[in-house]
Image (cartoon, rainbow, N blue to C red; front, side, top):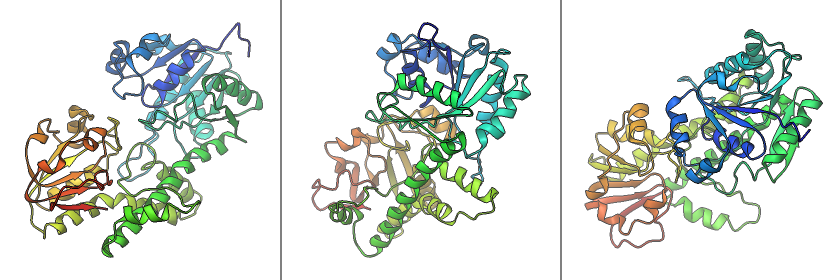
Length: 422
């Protein structure tokens, strides 16, 4: 790569994936971050990242240009698409955001520029070349002349300060060897861990979709044996403590599987399998087990109270600990089931947006929830604030139950209080 003429890069989508990548790229290349959410761009310009992935100081120090207008992103050398790829109500891949982003990129490419369009969004094999490429061409640019395609699967883990984009291996693939090498040169500047050149774009797409499907299946096994051992009056945490002493035992844990990756990506793989005439029994079985975990937890709590409804405090609503991300939160399943069983449920979360919780799930977060007492208190998400509570038992009414989904208080002594964990 000619260092005297560095590529101009546009990152399309400034969420959990796009923003850290754009900030990292801006350290080495002239980079623009484009997001259709004007409020998001305004917040970032003011130094606030609602995802908590990038600090105010990092934003202030960055040369990244932020915009919500396509006109500010025309004529770049590289476009990197990092928009979400969710599923619909029937758990079918929803390519709406990536289709929309592809149309936007198609309008931005200048004729004859030979721009590279890279997708980081999770998809099933074939989407980049068979779906996105034609959509770009529908806007006018000609593939092979005006633009070329590439893929580099994102590996962002929200809240993870160890495996950040500048420390992980980046898989890259282009539709030609030349594109692959150019992407390798760009991403090598971003990460100290280096890059892996995949055999093809489809191989890179497949690698991404199986990474999280594998985790989902392993967690499903943990959730299934948790249910088995619960009926045998065994705590899964005691079992894992013992099993974990074996050198090759895999350290997976049971729990509620939500978020934008593990709870979604397996459906993309299942969709591909069904399109090819293969019934993905293991993949969908794992999904079924994990999707049913919230209702199972609620039923165990209800049974522990002898089927008597009461007041319940749920601690935590985000899909994982220490992040504000509410996407695909499976804590909602616990809330809904408890309400259906007749309980009055109060939800508290120090990190989640009250507005987003209300908009996405119709749940009103109670900021003052820790000032009352309840028949059942369930630590659903092990936020640091809950782990450090001086006396969680003080939240439990007389004769009540302290429930701990992830075992964060399992080694603390609360006297004769009735307690439950997995």
